[in-house]
Amino acid sequence: MALRATYRFTTDEYHRLAEAGILEEDDRIELLDGELIIMPPIGDDHCGRVNSLTRKLSRRNPERWLVSVQNPIVLDAYSEPQPDLALLRLDPRAFTRKPTPADVLVLIEVADSSLAYDRGNKLTAYARAAVPEVWIVNLLDDVLEVYREPRGERYERTLTLRRGESVSPVLVPDVALEVAELLL
Image 1 (cartoon, rainbow, N blue to C red):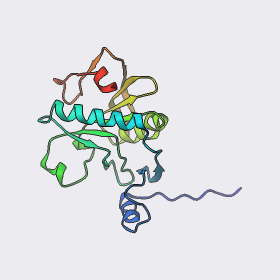
Image 2: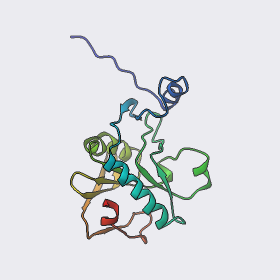
Image 3: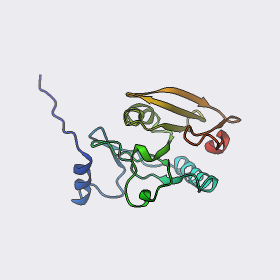
């Protein structure tokens, strides 16, 4: 039986691939745990939800957070995923470098065809990097999945919220958002 050889890319090597033109800027590829993950094309519903959330969250509390849309988050030397949205701490450095888990208030993934990946490897990587809170806007079940309290490779606290309920980010507890607003 032959052994399968693999190679684990670092974030620096990932960027060199892009600089060399091997990866194009419009390629939908994420680096997660050293692997290049080809992401499915963004569908109409997914695109519309990301645009809607961007508008609502940007207007909601511009003095409390910066909304970053489909931009990378540097988790470690082997992972640089691109969540659909990130609510980031307001910090002047946010305009001069890529954010890290210390900058994150909440990461938001809009999931339809990517639901298994978002709940699986990606959520594990976020927990391992101690991202404080992840929300998955689950388009298939029309619910908001909330993941909090990262421990090792998992989140200790999970909530499934429906229309009619509200949610407040752990790090911004005085801001309540209606789940129905997030699901539209």
